[in-house]
Figure 1 (cartoon, helix red, strand yellow):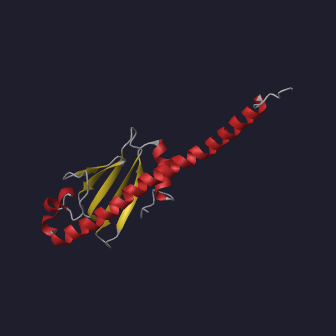
Figure 2 (figure 1 turned 180 degrees about the vertical axis):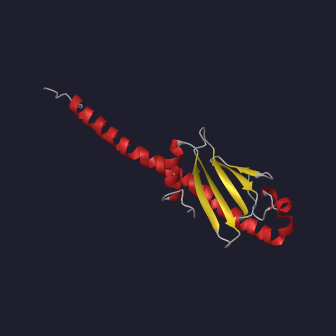
Figure 3 (figure 1 turned 90 degrees about the horizontal axis):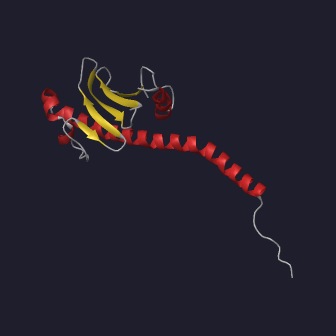
Length: 159
């Protein structure tokens, strides 16, 4: 009685490794973009919460806005908040002071080695709209801003 050798040939193993390599090469960039979109969505969601909380605080304490409306005493109870900033795994949020054009604003800086980009949101005095912009700080940040904004990030009107 003869036994037939069982197993895979070298060619079959190479084909499988090649297919896995191609799938990884195609899937890895998409994963990075998806992960960055998730981080940006976290920042934009938090920015919406802060925008609404600042609006409530501003309408209540207009004359004493800077002293009364800090991250620790807003209507929204946000973990990791100090008076001037909020730190999450992905971003550090900082409250921006108002000026002649804007009532107030929030800036999110990406927490990574290069701090690739920041997202700023400001409440306009002229029409009351909340404008968001993505500001790249590195070459990689330019591409990530396109991912975050979903279109050209350096538009005057933001995204």
